[in-house]
Image (cartoon, rainbow, N blue to C red; front, side, top):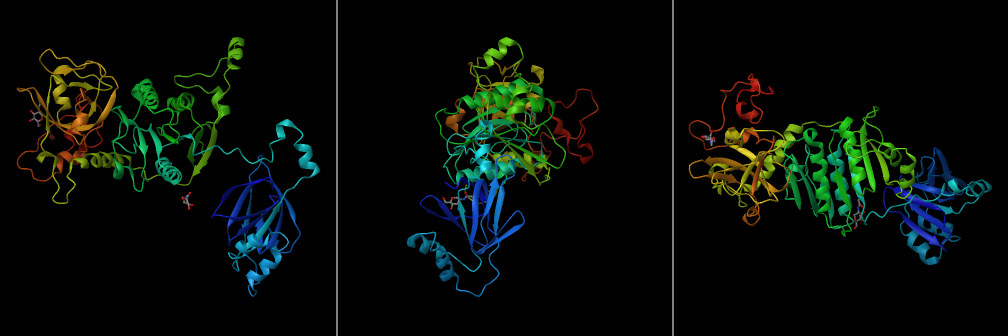
Length: 524
Ligand SMILES: *[C@@H]1O[C@H](CO)[C@@H](O)[C@H](O)[C@H]1NC(C)=O
Ligand SMILES: *[C@@H]1O[C@H](CO)[C@@H](O)[C@H](O)[C@H]1NC(C)=O
């Protein structure tokens, strides 16, 4: 009735309504109340400040205007200067004219020497009356349309690398988990994955708060696709199609919020991918993070999107026919939120990725405390090479070199739709396609004579039964797995310094194999 709506307050407000006409609010010292709308404010008790102006107890009432066209007003409680008084009795006397005995008693109980109590009353002036007679201004003082967050909010979060996107998302998920038991999470950032090793797109149901960095909560998502690279330039269509297919696997009737994480690539084609994702997915909110004064990219507002060029999607062209058809399909709307981040990242992405992988592989350790079990002491699964195809994603490897490439590598354990048939030997895919993935493994050896791959993986055997393809990408095992695990005698397998990086075409797949000498680090 007071035509105001509280946008933000630093702690729960004590609000008493009388006949739904007055609104009296108790504010504790320095508590703020940010609101949208219009009202008459009276300070009944204590002292408040609004836009630099102080309103004291007993001072006259003032009209406050906080329209949608401007930055909302904030009231701040300052408490009163005169501390020597019996707060409760005085407050009770003051409130006598405004509140019933019962609500007065309730409110007064909470009064302290530093409290303030304000009264908000409806405000209508010739100005507001006149303005609201125009259709386009009729909502000027209306409370903002609050979307139903506990329904199906679909929140896409984007922003350049190192802007604090992943921290922001964790806080967002945790905040949502305070109101709903589950949050869905669609992973679209290949480099900074939250629940999986890098290079993996996935859909997860989050039930527990995320109280640490990603490597501390590596869990198996509901659905995964191994993309095999920590960036998506090589196959933009594959990237988009994978995300679309993950989205389709989400139960559509589900009434829980969804968070969509995106690549930190916000320029050129990366920006076009964002445009596509907003068009493809039923996004209700776009949170765009940026830092500093320079704009990293245009604001992805609904207005901007109407004319924006995507990678797979295009703005409607301006032919008369299109205009006609467009009328049948209303433009997409969503809430766009710009977040200016003060955080300049820690930027240790390489470390992040290595930790995620080590976090994943730690699932191979047993639950009992005790000495750690180096990977080479674990018994691997024996996988017949006739039953499981091998493939390399995003690049070609001659079939005769396949074993060199995949030996001692991290592989995605994938499920091809078609049956794998062997003519007696290993099955090598000439062109690997992106397909569902159930987890990861280390292919730690190949017995060519018996036709067996030796595979270490934490994936449950019941799930492994569905795997018919091992995909190799450019996500490599952390080199410490090969060089620093204890209990080794003699020459270290898989590791060599005898390798020329100057050879044209050398090292496309197994770049790190030679990284024994720091002097060779960073050579492509
Ligand atoms: C979380 O929920 C509790 C009660 O369910 C509430 O007291 C608290 O203010 C909420 N916190 C946030 C950050 O929403
Ligand atoms: C795999 O690597 C190991 C260790 O370097 C090597 O002994 C073995 O011959 C390799 N296997 C194949 C099939 O290349």
